[in-house]
Image (tube, rainbow over all chains, first blue to last red; front, side):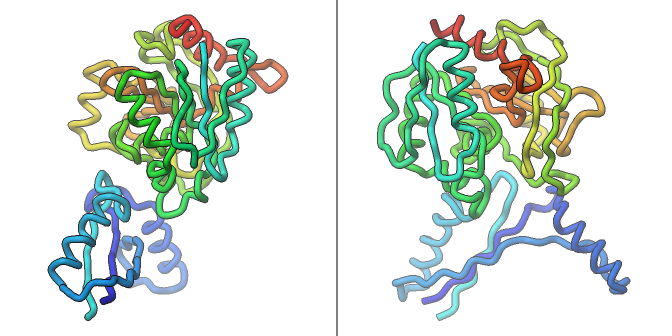
Length: 80
Length: 222
């Protein structure tokens, strides 16, 4: 099974990189661009076929390492 | 006073820390490789500046899980004094020995220069030889030194006298919340700070404002 984990800054946490990307896009003529938030995407191959088990293990991985939950939130996507 | 410096792959201030410790305490520190499972029996453990594990994932995240850190965490919880400088501070927040997190600098730039700081707490083994409110200059050298914690945590840190260093008015180089440059843990035996006291212990290297920290430790830890 494959999983995709998205790690992004929590709402309300300042994202200076996102801001810089937004400004750069505006500068390139993409005037319609408003707020930009950026983050990380982590693809993980799992030796696990049970979706429920996989999700629970991935949650532990996020809490223990993949995200710093002081400032970041995460989303897990499973791809059978 | 016996000390140890933990060396991670891509630490780059470990030798500066060792020189400062030897100069001021008169004893060479143990240099402990990150893969070692045990820190020798010492009075002070220093987590040095640098880019441990290339800052992969987040600065300090990988180092916080190293075998040496398991023993550092254990010893810190038993009361051993731990000083984390710059990357060492990031390792301390990632290992949850200190609250909050160090984020990308608000101005996005890596900042390397001397900054004015105020010593805001002298009731600590790290700062007893400074005067309360004393203005000192330490160099900063970081891209991710922007201290963040929720308001409740910040209020608690301030209320419990755990903010030891603040960037002086107009000197905040990275957007840190409430100008915080260095904090203590609840039991006051762990200090993390972004600026580098170990780089200012010799007039030849631009200043001696950092000496009092090592002299405080020497006096407090024997």
